[in-house]
Image (cartoon, rainbow, N blue to C red; front, side):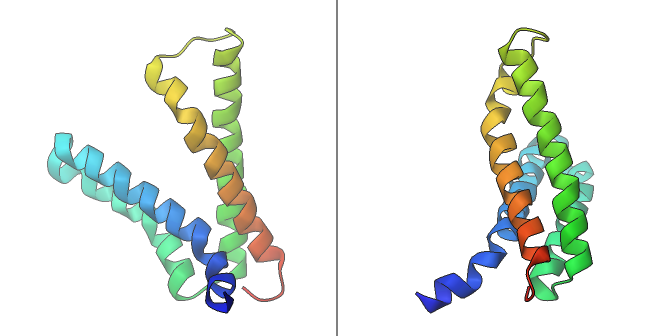
Length: 115
């Protein structure tokens, strides 16, 4: 149980790395070599796993809180029929909510004493 409790701080970074890997594989199937710049988005999260930095952690957390809040607001506007999206826009809501939670977790980690 100690091992699990000591490694829970890495869950948000692994989540965002898995999202980058998934996004890369989906785009790589259709676009080919032009999908490789997507892997650059994973560098900050990989850096946080190797050598944690409180400032980078806070910046990543705030950035993804803003992005996922924007996605949640877009979903809410679609839900209340203010703006209508395609079906793929409706499927993004779970990703947006989980990303919001993970970003808050990253901010919480950066505010703690030990990262």
